[in-house]
Amino acid sequence: MVYRRRSTEQRYVKYRKMMKQQAAPGCNFCQFSPEDKQVRVAHEHFLVTDNLFPYEIWDSHEVADHIMVVPRRHVEGIYQLNKTERAELMDVIAEYEEQGYSVYARAPENKQKSVAHQHTHLIKTHGKPKNMLFTSVKPYILWSK
Ligand SMILES: [Zn+2]
Image (cartoon, rainbow, N blue to C red; front, top):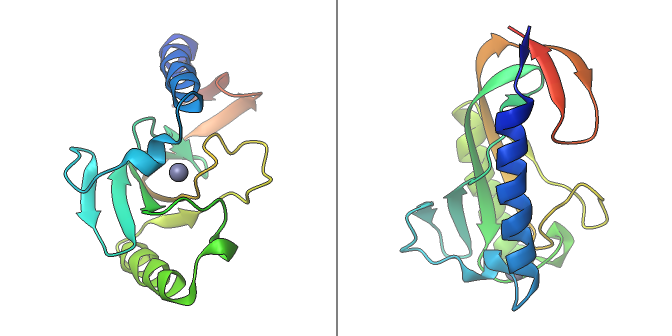
């Protein structure tokens, strides 16, 4: 069994600090620019970015890659996108799904959603199963190899 509380906890502290800074002047996701290092692809209405705090486990498997599709304009839900933006979002996520990425977006009211700005997670796993023994409130997760 591997107990990785410390590294996850350190990452969580960094994450909360970033979220706190974000709350002050505005939305960090609105600040993304196509020139940013973490931006992989710039589409007309969306940016595909690295997730700075990638999940380690998804669907009980090790995460190989965790990126996000972020609308360039501030919206909190997919329902606020216009038809052109919705069509582009579907094209983008379809492309990644074909490459083996799972697609996940939280509803605006979801209490686990840490950034109000709508974003869609694209998560690819290694296919190596991780048997979770116990889960609690983030970031305390125990699992075995
Ligand atoms: Zn925003």
